[in-house]
Every structure is written in structure tokens, then in C-alpha cells.
Length: 375
Image (tube, rainbow, N blue to C red; front, side, top):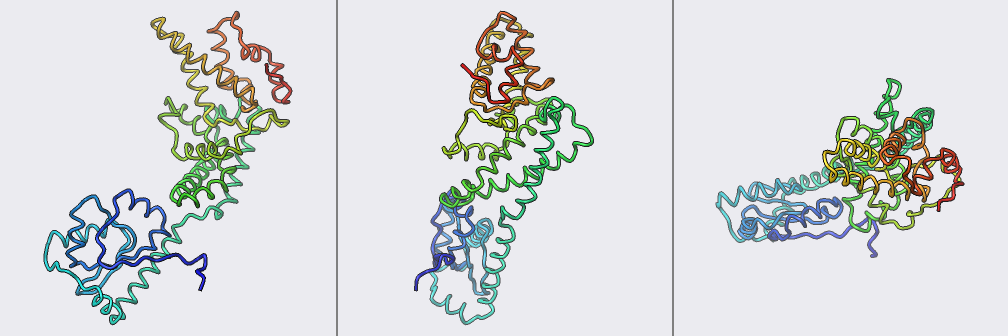
């Protein structure tokens, strides 16, 4: 009979010593389906098993049916298995070479033990299913939260933009936004964690399926996390404050070459800045401007100016690729504040392709229309 897709292979061992190291155990534990395919029948009096735990290089994996003269019990937690085996080993009483044929016969004869085993396995499987994260379950709610943030972004264009509104001008009416961000972050953190737990093939399929939604979420929400970070007076968000789930979502996109398209678009006004850490770079550039002004030596000043020149190149590259939202040009935005300070440091004689673009506000309108011809 052909095995069906929903049937998984099952490996049953009898008296097997521990064979996997900690890394193997972690890899197995990350896939609940794979881990439950291994059932180890082990006697607590088995000399071979007891001796294998003395070598701390080995760790248990799978499900253990631990048997003794008083009955049997099922364990899946590696910590519980090790703790019990270690205790028996330390007592060093009654250890022997075991006859697993007799143990299996006793299990079959003892209907209560078998019933308990089945119930325990079913209970563990149901618990897994309850804990298992189902992405589609809250998807509609997350779409609603994203739509609300898009509306928040839209109405913020009457001011300095949604980044600066959230950072410096958060009113009582905006407090719901904090809740939307929290719910979206919790959802995507769990999404990323679930994807990383899956075996390579299944994980790749999962990541591809959710790549577009995850990228939109990251580009919409991470700037607001950046705003909150710098509002608290912190520095170096990218290295010190960035959440791992944002890094993973960005890595998914980098690994999907089909999604790496940039260039002119007819709808620049509505785009999200492709680099979700853009505003962190802006904040660091503002700090650099202050360093230049307060520099105690020419060396310090030169180092800060060199970093500012690199930031200028970074921004100009984004602009050329139409990869940054035009809201950066809004009056009062952190970016325009940086440009004012940077231009003041460079002085009026300063010239570059980026400066030529920034000096003329008409170019901002052309950029919004996708009509500016970059050299």
C-alpha cells in the first residue's frame, strides 16, 4: 500500500544509548513533526543507557517511553529525560542488561500502561496543535492594522510626515497607533520564529509565501520603532537596537532576487522607503552634524565629515533609484533639518549632484511625479 502524504515515518528504538549532541537535539526540537517521529523505549535500569549519559556530549531527542518495574511513563522534554536518567545513574542501583522483549510483552499485557501511553501521546499532539502558530488565523486583523497605519501615514503629510509626527508630535488621538504597532510586531515576530523553526525546504516555501506582506510590514512599521528609539535618546539603532525579526525579514528579501527591483515608477508619492532603516541613518547623520560643530580637533571634524559624505552618497543613490518616499522633503522633517545643517556646514560654495538636486525645491515635485532625470 502506498504511504499517504499525511503519514510520517516512525522510528522506534529499544535500549538505544543517547546518540545526538546538543546541536542535533535543538535541530530536532525545532520541528515538532520530525521530533515526534522518534519513540525511544528505555528501561530506567538499563546499564547501557545509564553509561551513555555520563558523556555530556550526548543529548536526548524525540519521545521517551521510560519503563520500570512499577510501570511506564512518556516524556518529550529533553530536560526531564536527562534529569530522570541522571538521578538513576547517580543512585547506581539495580542497573543491568535489559531484555526489551519482556518489557514489550509487559506493556502489551498491562492494558493500563498502553492506554496511558496513547492518551499521553494524544495529549502532547493536541497541545502542539494548540501552540502551533497558524499564520492565516490573524491575517485579516493584521491587514486592518496595516490599513490604519497607511491612513496615519497619509494624514501625516499635512505636517512633517509620519516618522516625525510619531517621534515628536504624538498626540492623544495617535495613541491607537502604538497598539497597532505592538500587535503587528508580535504577529511578525511569531511568524519569523515559526519560519526559522521549519526544515529548510518547508521554511523556504513559507518565507516565499509571506515575503511580500513581511516586506511591506517592515518598511511601514520599522521607521516608527526607529522614531521611538531615538525619541528615548538612544543611539546606533542598527547595531544596538534593531530587532532580530526585522533582520530576518530583510534577509528573506535579499535571498529572493526576483524582488530586488528598483527604478522609476509612475506612483512615487505612495511608495514606502525601501530601506526600512533610512530614518536611523538620518538620525545618525544629525548627530554627526553636531559632532562637526563641537569637534575639539581637526581629526575629529574630518572623521565626522567623512561619514556625512558617505551618508550623502547613500541618499543620492536611493533618490536615483526612486527608492525613498518623497515625504522626506516635507517641511520640518528630520531629513530636511539634516539637509539644512549639512548645507550650513558645507557652505554655499558646496557643489555636487546631490546638492544640485536639493538646492531647488522644484526638483522635489519632479521627483514625486517620477519626472526628474538624474545625471
